[in-house]
Image (cartoon, rainbow, N blue to C red):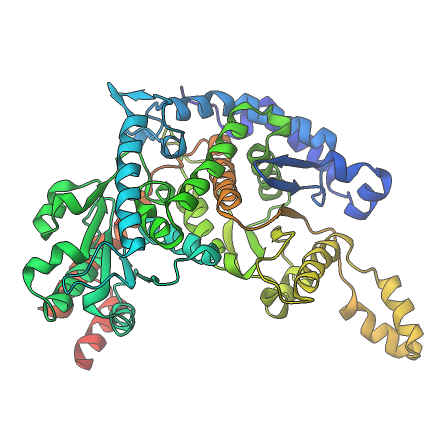
Length: 547
Ligand SMILES: O=P(O)(O)OC[C@H]1O[C@H](O)[C@H](O)[C@@H](O)[C@@H]1O
């Protein structure tokens, strides 16, 4: 059903009016006015705790935002997704990453096929293979156990497995070193091949389509390198594939027995729960991989069942929408205060920006509001000593998601209290700021003259009133990480529904791919200056002159 333009809806217009009232709100004042603000504006689900109280909103704002979610049909569209309806309209596909983490024995029939049975058949194969490699009974062609795993994939076939293997490094198998090659830049493959021994290396070629040029080139290079050191019939012990494209895998020369399939109803950026998660299962073991799926499933259940006003992904989405729309926040910074989550911002960049970086509605009309903000970030405390200056005192307001674990995964003294202190101090500082009068008092206490105080005070003043969320978990373990990733998946989904964009296609990456093919032919053959502008022709000429 075609949605009306967002700005024409009654709930959006009510929010617009409310936003004018809210313009002057100060977070300090909101906290002072209501000692219950923290318990009121926090929610628990699936082992995660979300504190959204440090956002410039109140109970009425939330009521209006929930009305907007209702008017936009979040509940119906959520149910349609879980039921396997073809909600990815431009590709005419169902969107069923949630089915990848549904427990065995929960049938879901799509196009006459029980998806649940298919999913668990593949998971069983992943378990058997994973157990053999980890136990050292899957041997390389020379009879030695595998010591290195090289995952060759890009985008969704790289970011998820890489982020999760790093995040769960505490659980990693001591014999297995994980390597991820994604870039077509030969330096990436060159660095990985320099670290591994062909006799004990397993290559995973991970590509949903098995046509992505970067992955295909890297796969060919890896195979050629391997065959310099081993006979052709050794390939079957050292190359496996994860894909939806059986024919292309056979054409590449991988035994279909070494293929772990998935399905076109799994989007690349939602695929880590499928056999694309094979590196994760190999690294941390199938039991922990199952825990990851269980945590995501727990968040799915919460998302399906909790009322909108107490639904963690819905609230995260609505608060994000409020900041984007009414505070005009063009970017959101992700700040994991956990070193092992240092690839999480990169993972969320693809998840959110490839999903909701859209400018037309599902019906093909231009959207009438801004959509997805830029997602970026890095681990705390590192960011504090780099770009946090701009976040505190720059001219733009950038909401921040702070993410932390209450207990560390190490036994080093003092570090964790210092880490958490910084995390909480930053969210407090963004919220409170420091007024010019507070600065003056400090400077007076330091014995500065009046002239010195007046010269310095504006520089040392913090506007504050800057929004943030804090997400806490007890400990970074597979279950909680699964819930965290699913939380952001569903947040992205809800925002996509509000903006009425298709969150499950990514046509925006196509143009560059087509042009790159043409230019590659010119770099290795004849230039075609008629095809380009003077800048592009000039750059091509420089590259040709350099070889
Ligand atoms: O898994 P593949 O088919 O190789 O795709 C890898 C990636 O490339 C594409 O260009 C898309 O933008 C991504 O969504 C996808 O994850």
